[in-house]
Length: 184
Image (cartoon, rainbow, N blue to C red):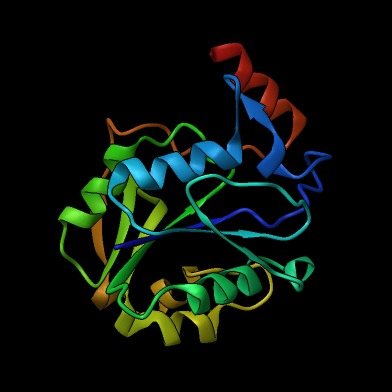
């Protein structure tokens, strides 16, 4: 089970690349790598673009087309996964409150396409089996990642309740970051 952290964006609304933002003394990039590794993913692949960074414990893939949106980063990350990876758990760098239990719950679901839910709503992370990589990559265009494939194939989706495994709130604006920091 591989892990894929999408961390290539510029963080336009935030004013800085999210990957480099620190929360609780740790870069969001490093928190995301730790989330996937502690959740049971090996290897962990990180897709970078707008920012360059040294990353411990992960394989770094640079996406030269990062500015075109999340879709190109997802395609680059899927292409970089080792052939022996039967599936991948995909996480986003801007959700620092998700805990490794969510990743483990997705893996334990033993599904070909699993989506974490919080309060009954689909969020991230997601698990995608290799058999779906090509279909996911084909629909990952612009700022759309795996969502288009997931929505097109509801019969394949296993929803995995992850309440109690963190908060899926994402950081998009300086206000989001300030609110997160005021809680911690």
